[in-house]
Image 1 (cartoon, one colour):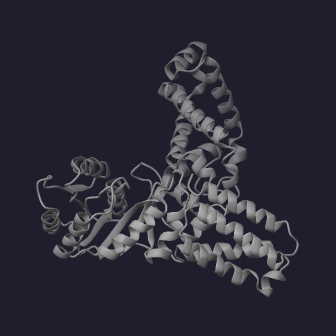
Image 2 (cartoon, rainbow, N blue to C red):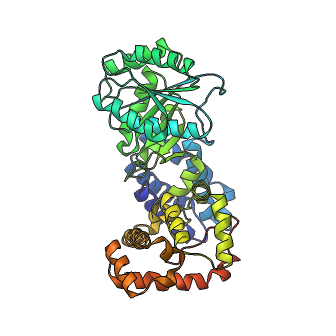
Image 3 (cartoon, rainbow, N blue to C red):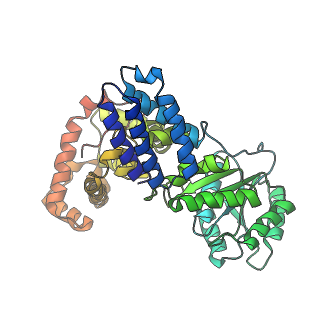
Amino acid sequence: MAFESLSDKLQSIFRNLRGKGRLTEADVKTACKEVKMALLEADVNFRVVKQFIKKIEERAVGQDVMNSLTPGQMVIKIVNEEMVSLMGSETAEVALKPRNRITVIMMAGLQGAGKTTTTAKLAGKWKAKGYKPLLAACDVSRPAAIEQLKVNGEKQGVEVFSMGDGHNPVNIARAALAHAGKNQNNLVILDTAGRLHIDEDMMQELCGIKEAVEVDQTILVLDAMTGQDAVNAAGAFDERVGIDGVILTKMDGDTRGGAALSVRAVTGKPIFYIGMGEKLSDLEQFYPDRMASRILGMGDILSLIEKAELQVDEEKAREMERKMRKAEFDFNDFLEQLRQMRKMGGIGDLLGMLPGMGSKMKNLKVDEGAADKNMRQTEAIICSMTGKERSNPSLINPSRKRRIAAGAGVEVAEVNRLLKQFEQSRKMMKQMSGMMGKKGGFKLPF
């Protein structure tokens, strides 16, 4: 999970501060020294760390903090505020023109950062907001890039403009813009070529495209797992081509966090989005305050709520609440709830957004895997039932149990366990209905 090591170290430092009734200047300096080491080990830029620690020390040794009844919490508050400031105090969004005009966005990045996949993710996100995007395949140096863009574009329901790999990217960009004008596309996203390393040809190609067509926004895609290399790349791209913002990919991986904490301070450019997985829906808005909260172990409840609201169908939720109130809940409803929960991500992703859970996730890894496996097994058992059996579980006799178990690849005992737990949960439905929120979601009993 992103920032896991850094988060653990910072929370350990802050636990020591909370345990002190009064803080001395020496306590603050010791804590700052430990925070400094944690940030450097997370691959945060050295100059950024130096400035960051200086600001914390200046604020934390003030009389207001030292005389506070909870000085440890005051220091944590200061670290949180400075971390938010470091990553950009306000949420940044890509600047798009009104829908009656064409916005041109050029995607740039090194090979392997996930630029082509991210391009399709963006197109899907803006399509959902009412734009009509056109993806332009300008990466002619990597043969698979054009096909990859076409496949992802089709999955998103977005048109892809391609002239093959035998044309100059500048001419492809011009032709794509002309095509957009004729076909009422109001957003053109140019997927350009990447290289394993920054080289002159790549930079000239990007500059050539910007000279040939009016590019409104240039977005750099960076691999968060490469740490300071990503920040250095951002500086080089901005100097030669000019960038308007950054998207960090692979934030769901074992990244140390240096890129996210350094890129804004080093380049002055905002982080627009973060990639949290391989699925085309796994692209999240970057909120500096929420990211700081997650790093410091305070959770990210707002993102969890938004994720739930995105996946929960209000119409279905109201119907679910009605069924639960009347104890009419059946296996079809249960299957729907399971699938909605899986759409929101794994158990670990959801728990990681809860306050105080970050430091405990390491101990829960085995349980997390078992929980996800249990969910898949439960889904397989329900899918092995007939429609009538799902609607009326009382029909499931011993012979039907054997058939269901064989279909799901489990023992009959597992089917019995599910049926027993389901019956117990149904008895609790009327009691639970009063505890449900207006969205109608409920806590799974197992």
